[in-house]
Length: 254
Image 1: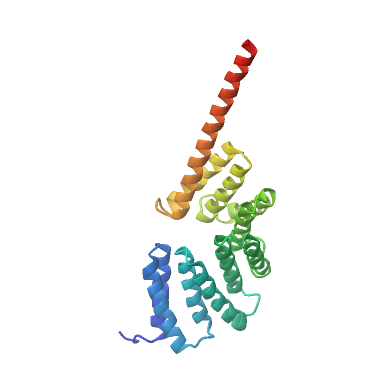
Image 2: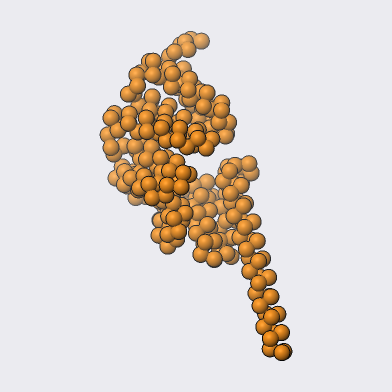
C-alpha cells in the first residue's frame, strides 16, 4: 500500500513469497508470484538487471518441477544471458544456472550434455567457493547422480564420496544435502547388486528426508521406492537360491 504495486520492493516481496511457495510445492501459486515480480522488474529495472534474471531463474525452477522442461530451459537461458553479461563467467549465479540447466537436461535424458553443464558449475564453484564448500559438495553429488544414470558407477561413487566427505565435515550426517548423497550412493550400490549396503544407506537417507523434508516430499517417496525395490530384489534372489539348492539336492539323489 505504501510503495505501490509497481515498486521494486513490491517485486522483492512477491519474489520471496514465490520462493516459499515453491519450497512448499505450491507451484501454480509460486509461478503466479514469480510472474508478478518479473513484470515489475522488467518495467522498473529493465531486461538486463540481475534481479530480472533471478525472476526468470525462479520461473525456470517451477517449470522444471512441473515437468515443462522446454519452457524451463528457455527461462534458464534468459537468466544465463543476463548473468553472463552483467556478472561475468565466473560468478556463483552463473554456476547455479549451469547446474540447473544440467538438471533439466538430465530430466530430458540428455545425460552427456547434463554432465557438461554440471562440470561447468563445478569449475566455477571450485574457483569461487573453494573445494570444501557445501555448494561444491552438492555439485559433486549431482555429478555423481548423472554418472550413475550413465552407468559409470565407479566414477559416480568417487564423485559422491567427495561430496559426502565435505558434507559430513561441514553440515553433518543429518542434513538434507547429506541425505541426497546417501540416496545417490544407495542407487549406485543397488546397481552394483550390493543390496544390503544399498538398503542401509537408503534407510539412512529416508530417515533424513522424513525429518528435514517431510513424508510427502518427492525425495522421500523416491527413497521409499528404492527401499521397496531393493527389498523385493533381495527376496527374489533368496527364492532363486533356495530353488537352486532344492534342485541341486534332487539331482544328487537321482
